[in-house]
Image (cartoon, rainbow, N blue to C red):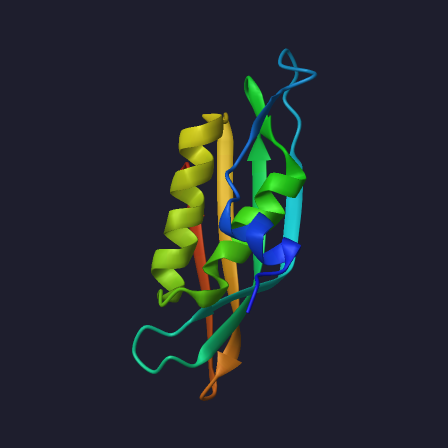
Length: 125
């Protein structure tokens, strides 16, 4: 079966940096991605989460369409909550080198367990 255009866009997705229009100013960008999904590496069951990204940019901001498509690449991957959240953090930090970055993986309860994974560029938890 031929892949749909959306599947191809997700498959080819790469995070894209854009120039920060106000690099001389500290301001917070908050992004919420409420339909994140991946697969449990132990059971193969789907895991669902809201991914929250907060950052103070320096020279670059992330282009939102590229972020949306890139995050959708996780949907068929076997990856733990902790690994997924840290991988998102690492990719954004490497791409943007922001003044501050926080990524929160708020995973839906499964088996009566609710997990929140928080990764920050400082140690203020």
